[in-house]
Length: 138
Image (tube, rainbow, N blue to C red; front, top):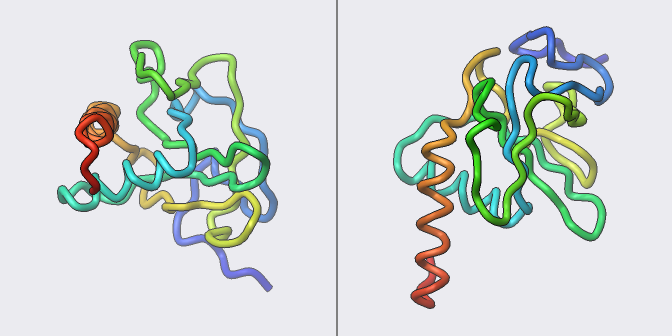
């Protein structure tokens, strides 16, 4: 028997992953898995709260989906990322799916409307680009 999730929301599946529209409850910034991990680590190191991120480790190009506030995709423009807003969809795992080699939460949502600040994601991406350009390591 599966324990009930600690949080519920209309967009959060209970038992199986579900295809959900972006641009309804939240938008998404899609990045590569490694980039997503580095962005979230930088945000954590700078005292930002944990925010929801979905990891899809399958395929040749593993991806992370960073949930951002509704409307953020309209103005997002960063190389190496894809903004998903209206008329797009992502697979969303159930709340309790947090590990494994299939779609799962890399960072679980803590509240139905707490998402990652797109400004903080942009700042972390700028930092990563500057570090790579300098040849330094994080």
